[in-house]
Amino acid sequence: MYRFLEKKYKELIVALILLLVLVTVNSFHKIARDIRWYDRAVIYVTYPAQYVLNSVVKGTVYFWENYIHLKDVKKENDVLNKENAELRYRLQNSLETESENLRLRNILQLKEKIALSTIPAEVISRDAMDVFKTVRINKGSVQGITPSMPVISYDGVVGQIMRVFPEYSDVLLITDPNSTVDAVVEETRSRGVIEGTGLDICRLKYMNRLDDVRIGNRIMTSGMEQRFPKGILIGIVTDIQKKNYGTTQKVIVEPSVDFNNIEEVLVVTTSLAL
Picture (cartoon, rainbow, N blue to C red):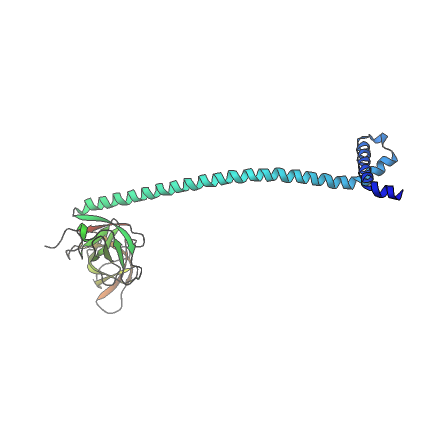
């Protein structure tokens, strides 16, 4: 008997499990009045295992369905993100083109306003060493550029040509300490000289202590030095300092041109000298 059980124990276990399953199924499908004491015992014994098995099956089905769903959602998100990126790229290009067209229209209007011979140019770089306050433009001696020519933009005075090469030139900005521009206060016609400070501001020198100049006044080119055209905006008065002694006053001017973002300029090639 022992040997028989030893040889057939696997078959007996399988048979026992099948019998248990059949009894369990039969027990669960009986109505309440047909359930006998041994049915209840089978249900009691097999219920925990069935509960665990049922939970595992449900969990597996739930995980699989959600996994498939999440894969579909990820694909949709990838497609949407790609479309959004393309739309943002197109919008940025459109805005950039519109901005460039606006700047070019402004330059054209300025060219017509001053009624002088000019050469349009683009800013291609800035002085990285910061030895001089300069920017480099993409026009040079080949295009007729020569040193000391005034450079302006739609926003106002930029500076003057400092160095010239065949295909490009360096422009000395009005914020450089070596730069001077004869100027006038637009509201009062008081005269002075704009000088760079080496920072992002200028000072209006030689202003008489009694001259009427106020914060917010516009400083324009006077045209008296025969370099810059008359009536080009230089900047706005932002600070005034008067000492208890002396004959002058210190006037700080913020340039109207944003030199960190300037892109297009006009080089005035017409000589204003008499």
